[in-house]
Image (cartoon, rainbow, N blue to C red):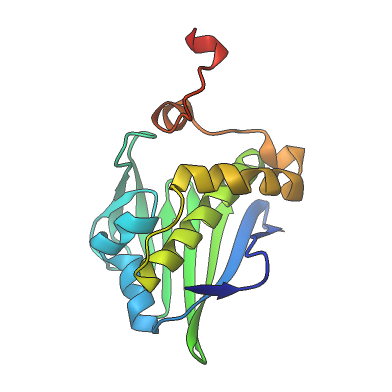
Length: 190
């Protein structure tokens, strides 16, 4: 299971004209086990929002697809691949970095997502928060007590409050809303 700071929330910072959300989580497992969860398709399917197609070689082109059609597929590039400690890739227009550090009885994962656009940071920060929670369940071999969309809905208001209105200007894509609706009919669907 995950052991981390009390709230497990991402921290927002501005870096070279971009914005970055950084999470630090500790997982009670070995570095190789966490690395497999970050790179092997059967483990990625449990926590990562897309499939990843391509070679695990620095410089390789990657292709990402949403299993439920929440958004169109897109491309990226594997930038750093240093098993079992460092993984970095371009995920569309975002830069994702996974840095693993062994600690007593755990592995500390520092995950950062760097964005061009401030307006979607609360939305995507909440999404990455939910994904990292799912990753904890995956490495523990447990089933989460909620669905990923439900977890996002639970933590999203915290990120809106934490990061402010400028970082909350862009909500979920329409495709995501259609796939993960809660049963409520939106006014534009009547």
